[in-house]
Length: 342
Image (tube, rainbow, N blue to C red; front, side, top):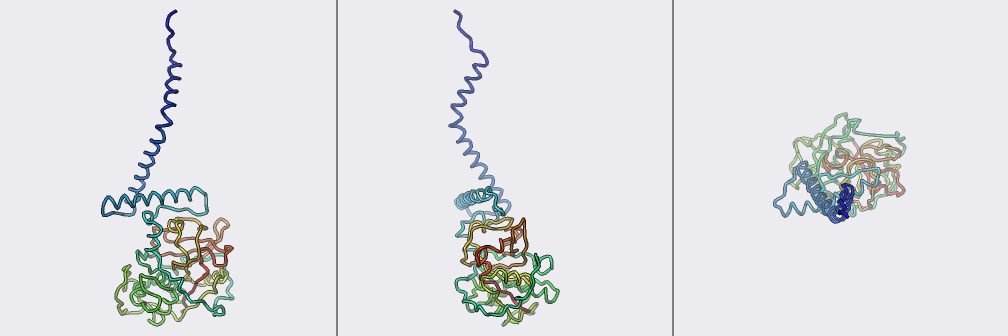
């Protein structure tokens, strides 16, 4: 009998079978290589976008590994379909500990207990359904504190800029550096942290502040210089009743308000957009400014101006969930709120 010749179809089936035996071991390696290549490309793109340069290859490799871990965390959170999104912002090559050391500065643990019967001038205010002091011209552009723990100064100055505009109709960018350099008694210690209330006390005793243009920000502790002119003044300050979001709402309906929050978490570090409902505690470590409130998709929020530049959050702002179950508010936002008077 003549030998049987394999048909083209049987040859094809055999080839596919042999490929099937080979692919399971090859595919994971190829996917891993592609993943590493993609991760490296994303890191290079991020470096170019943020103008990041490192002193040597060793530091670059270290930062690349941190970036990779942060990116995995960001992607995992974003895949959960939450009300907010995270992104590889300018802090993506920092560990959370490095981030906290560089960009906080509120000395919340040292705050004295507030008087429960302190006056609250907005107690009888009927707050509208929403407020955005940016649209009313009472908020200066977002600023950047850099690697100086003086968030407390930025928070206090932003609140002062707001009340000055409300009272005079003039929006003036005031000098945080004057506060950093000159307010060094008590708890306020420039880049080493401070309190918004103490900043208000200094501004009152200093008879006001000069402009940002005349005393520009340097992001370091400097020598106090006597300002040649005063651009704005305040007459006093008041604390919002503690742990009371309804009272805080009335205050923010009336003017921008200094608030302290716990901003130490990974999710806060990489916040990009949406209403933030993430995990955070009440260990107050960062001073910011509440400049409005509203509702988005049925979720109530606080509109908060930060001092980490426009490359963080929604062009420097964050929407934080409002009216939560905890009396302290999300991230403790209702615990240590205050505002200047003029």
